[in-house]
Image (cartoon, rainbow, N blue to C red):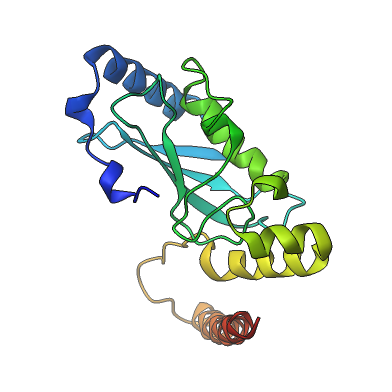
Length: 205
């Protein structure tokens, strides 16, 4: 399996036409992002495509924010890119190193599919996992035989690893707000305690 780092920095290997096409599509995705998908442009290396995908409603991934990476090889778009989850996730079609297995990036690949199609396919995979082509055998087995256990495990991993980061506000509050802030701190401590217990549970599973 190719590692994420070995796939990076292929700019010099891609044709100028391909680079222009990728830049154009990335700019379009920034201007008109698909629902639940937000791309990041790496100005230094356009072949390093990263995006954030919202965990879809009605799935164990709901409420999570998942970072994914597409690594374009020198043969792109004739050959599909490699796709990885950079956020830890419990999913049948995601290997331990984060690599994603989906037919669109294998036998069903077509050179005109484009980056938007790939990102939407990954989002769909969160809604409908495919146990037939499992890279995580444990997740695939649980999905088929004990869905509730699979869902609980995936939800727990989402709560531990895929929570959107909140940016703290500057300046300490005073007066009644200070009391509220103290209460919030207490809640945060309780949340951390719950997360610790969940991590322990995960290790036991």
